[in-house]
Structure formats: structure tokens, C-alpha cells
Length: 233
Image (cartoon, rainbow, N blue to C red; front, side):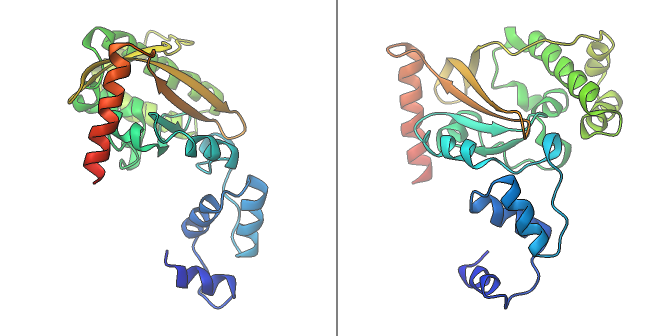
């Protein structure tokens, strides 16, 4: 969106913006949900849904993320769809906002894209397989049979024998480990603590990855920041 286009909108001289454009404006201005909904109504659109299907990030969560430029961090939906990343987050996991369709979900990629597993230590794969299936079952139970979560589950049941096997175990309540082991293609093994800040109103989570000061992983994170800066340059 150009500054000229936005200026014409403010003067009520531009074309009626689409719902997608309004969503981008609301997010760019860090509007609250009530402010976002008011903006949509002013433009003649019904406001988007709130809760589990919403992708509008709360201003408070965005302000926290904006202060974490030197730390790997990301904001994700309850289905593991990345909405925003810090530069260090991109350096750690790659740009996970680039995916479209069902592949936006980390859990969906885990069962359908072998490349999704390369970032994690092999010994953690069995646990992560159970965790993703358990987490999706929990969201399907919460959101119902007509939800996006149920749609993803149906897709995976059709595509992945491994998913069908763990889904039939009916496990629920398996939580992520606080300490995660990454295998980064440039700096190697990383042991990072993941802290989660949850926005229950939007079912979004801010994930922040840190290393113990003085540890080998801490030094590698510093190296990763240098590599990321060079890549941007």
C-alpha cells in the first residue's frame, strides 16, 4: 500500500478498500480489536471473526515483539501459523510466514514436508509427532467439527499414515518441552529455552527463544545474529 493510496483513503477520495487491505491497515496502526471492528464498519465491511480464527495481533503483543529484535521470537496462532517473526527468529527457523494454505500450520508441515524435521534433533522426532497430533486433537475438541482444526485433521488423515497412527492413539494434553534442541544448518546444535506469552482473547502465543548466558548455545546465538545481519545486508 502506497502512502498516496492511504492519504486518499483518509480524505475519503480513494476506492473502497478490501477486507484484506483493511486488515493490513488495522494491523499496521496497531489497532485494538474494537478499533479494528469500527474501522471495518466505517468502510462498509463486516468485521472479521475473533478468537481462534483471527489473525489480528493485539497491540500489546506487537509492542513486546518489537522490543525483541536481538532475540529469536515469533507470534503464532493456535494452529502454529506464524504471523510475525523477529529478524533473529527468521535467522533461527527461516521465514515461516511465507507459507500458504494448510502448510502455514507447523503441525501440518511436520507430517507432510520432510524438510520441516531437519531443524529438530532426531531423538525428539517421536515426541514431536505425538505432541502435534495431541495438540490438534485438543483444538478440534475445543473448536468443533466445522473448524479449521478439523479441516486440517481430515487433510492429514488422508495424507499421512504416520498421522493416522498417532491420531488413533487419542492422546491429549501433551505439552511442548520448555527446552528445545535445534539443528541449525549454519551454527549446528542449539539448546534453547522457549518462553510462551499467551493472548487468550485471540488464541495467539508469543514464543521467545533464549540460551543460558555463557553457554555454547548462547555463543552460537550471537554468531547467528551476525550471520543474519550479513544476510540482510
